[in-house]
Length: 129
Image 1 (cartoon, rainbow, N blue to C red):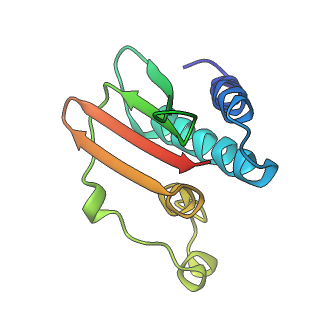
Image 2 (image 1 turned 180 degrees about the vertical axis):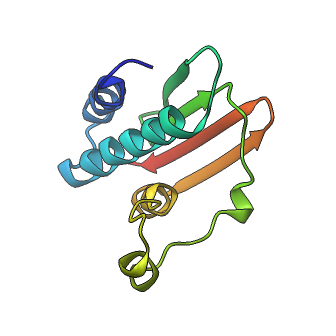
């Protein structure tokens, strides 16, 4: 976990999205989702080794159909089902305005799967071409 590593991770995902000829809008959505997922891992994982792992895959039989990005940490985990869905009204009144990461990721990507336990968290995000 080094400063601006989320930017480097987004560059890798962007490169793959460009290679499969995604539209510029979809590439931007992938980039933003990867940045959000990495920031969440950096800020919340409490991983003792301070590492975040990234895997970028292009899936498809004949030609590229889907881009899947996995962001994994070996941190303390969390209960994804217990994360409160933020609302604008509540956030405007709250002292802490942050907490939109998972909502943003889900809104930007076609598929999002989160697995988390005391051994870490894995977020798999996929976007169709």
